[in-house]
Image (cartoon, rainbow, N blue to C red):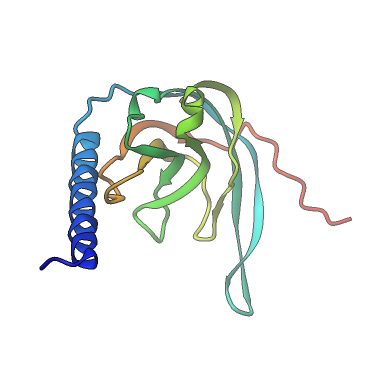
Length: 189
């Protein structure tokens, strides 16, 4: 009546069904856990400012401005980890207007924290130098409002990686002023 292969088929597909239901429940309950992150950016300042020669398109170059940011960062993000979080992506972006564009968004610092190192999600970093510089080809970046924003994304173990679904934001605004900064040297040796 029922062969061994037929019974193995039934047991195998029932097991897959149970694993699928468990994965869906894990993904749903992981999104519903409460979180209470604390994020602050202190003392943002420009440290280097000067001209920048960059490639905008193939075979053309355009002059622009380049600036380097420093800031203090206070993060307490360990509450974002639960049984369904594999990694936490953290980045600091700078947003500012320019003559040609209403909004320019540049990533200035980022890091990835694994679930095994979730104690590292609580950190106070002093005098952080941005990994990436502000390079603007559109015009001068002086006396313009600059928003520094901390974003985070949670990468789940099971379920959809919803861009913006696990996102948090903290923004601090300050005025980008280059008058007190000595320009970076532009001489070639």
